[in-house]
Image (cartoon, rainbow, N blue to C red; front, side, top):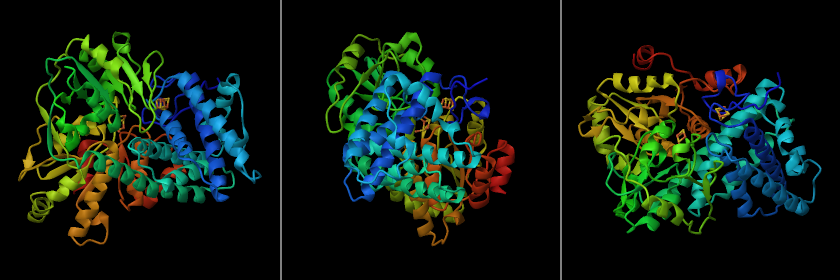
Length: 544
Ligand code: SF4
Ligand code: SF3
């Protein structure tokens, strides 16, 4: 039977091979095929911008932003709204047609750069240009690995762009690499080299976002975050976009409405800037996949600034709002240009009519161990390593997800010997951040740097320790990497770590379906990438 769609970009893909009938995430075949077309036309636009740059012509910032937002829109659990995707395809085609007029030499452009069509052709065209349109399994695997890494890079760029920070070199690379995934003359070796280059720009993209966040909101510091509730009505804000949070806090102050973070927004509490808002209450709930029961209990409106959206139940769908690259059919989307204030009044007015959140937990969680905070504690940390009080660090950054096999990560954290410290970032932390693992000489055994993009902090910390201990190779440090992945931002984080020379990363709960056996072999042979087994066996493997 013919596939209705094909997508294998995330860890939860059906049967660990590919979603062909409907997405496990809830994506319909119609939306999946339209997303494939959006990726295709964005690659076409990128081929045109890359050719323009080669002719020495300038590409406007708006076009760079369009490419990033388009890719972000197709990340797992970001946008389920077909109208939003169609309007992005139309806008991209229109922008591309205009840019084509500026291009002198159109001879070497790929088909995607020249294709145009109206809405009635979109779904059919989408079916023809998806993942399976590349027949060779290894070329397909590498093209997708690169495309997913670029989606992650685009997401991080987008957040920096919202804070009015741009890196034109990152944008130019992103578009050139996208266009190279259309180039049939590139060999497996060429594409392996391009994959590693993505890692370099992954580091640059995360550095750009880190600079944007810390220069705007200060450096994260050790912070204890309340996980209980107050008695006022509340708004729950989820996703990764700190600028959206800032605008929401500004507009809710003095209104009697509290603001709570959810999932990847938790690390906002670590930034000094947000501490001045009395109505910034705490964190509600856990990682993205538990949102159905938690959003219902929250009682008030929820604002999704990025992925991960789970298709909402009717019980709270009318109080779920989207903004930025996200969208869900039937949920109100609040738009806004970079540098302009978004209007959240409707959300605030709705919150006032809602009951306060139902308490689901009490207590606090601690985080804020991004690079500057850890550097400030460097003497204590180094002393603890030298004395043997800290024997090893285990990087457990990445994503959480609904797969039952992910209980491995809670069990692993619980089973870790008392002289080991977890370094984390991303929503993976919810598998163990409410466990009481104690501390080592005042250093908590779980050091949370922040969001998935703050894996950059973990890399800086590793490089700093290498320097302090006078080592030649980052792999000589007492650090083990046991990373969990789910969506495409984890792909750029992984490629960035490979670029920095980190070897022997364990990736779970399963290896990506988009790695063909040969591509997986390249990663195993050159970087020692491996999966996970059982907690017991992995403990023996990592620590003996
Ligand atoms: Fe399937 Fe994941 Fe793609 Fe959704 S994003 S359709 S779950 S592979
Ligand atoms: Fe989580 Fe979706 Fe990846 Fe940013 S919110 S880490 S999964």
